[in-house]
Image 1 (tube, rainbow, N blue to C red):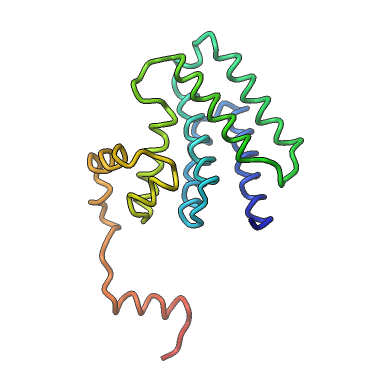
Image 2 (cartoon, one colour):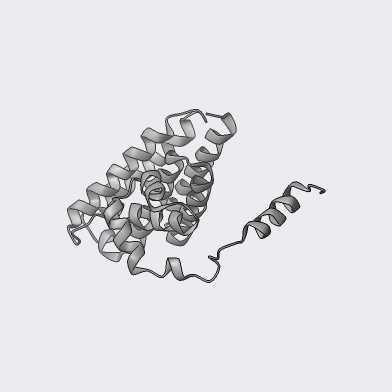
Length: 188
C-alpha cells in the first residue's frame, strides 16, 4: 500500500472523529459519500468500510431513540475513546482494526435497541453498495466492495430509480473516442 493512500484513510478517520465529537450527522454523511466515491475509484475495501462506519454513525446520531438509550453514554464514550486513540496511532497504524472495532460498537448498540430486523450496518452496506452501483460499478462489484448482501442489494436497487437517472446514458464508440482523444490530447 502506498504511504499517501494510508494517510488519506487516516485523514478520513480524523474527519470522522471530529464530526462525531461535534455530533454532526450531516458531516458524517458527507464523509461517507466522499470515502465511498474514492473507494469506487480505487477499489479499496478498507476505504469502503470507513464509508460504512461514517454512514452508520450518522444514522445513530440522527435517531433520537439511540441517544435516549441507557447504553448511549457508554457507546459515545467508547467510540470517542477509540477515535481519539487515532491521534496516538502512527499514520501507518491499524486503521482497519480500529474501523472494525467501531463498527462492532455500532452493531452492539443497534442490536441492543432491537428496533429493526436488519441491522444498521447491514443496511448501511446495502445503501452504500447501491451508491457504488450508481457510480458505475456492477452489482457484484459493488456488493463485494462494501460487503453488502448481493440479494438485498439487487432488491434495493430494483426498488429505486438509479437505473432511470437521466445522467446515465449510453455513449457511442465514436463519442468515447473523442472524449479519450480530448483527455489524452491525442492529435490525429
